[in-house]
Length: 105
Image: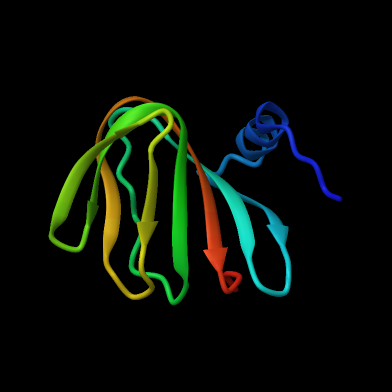
């Protein structure tokens, strides 16, 4: 079993001065923690993997393809492989648990 604490992952991510910290990579999936602040630009492009986002905290808009919705704590969103997507209009510090399948490179 592997167990992770989000507060420790967020501290490690911040210490590495990055918006994203991959903390798990297994044969069929990987997981990371993504963080954006109000005013940040999300530079993501479409990925080769399916993704699940679970918003741990914060508030923003999420556009996937041509659909946009407001996301906040407790929101879970699925993003199919190859579809452009990004977070924007971030109004509260955003922390998102990201799961890729198959694992990201």
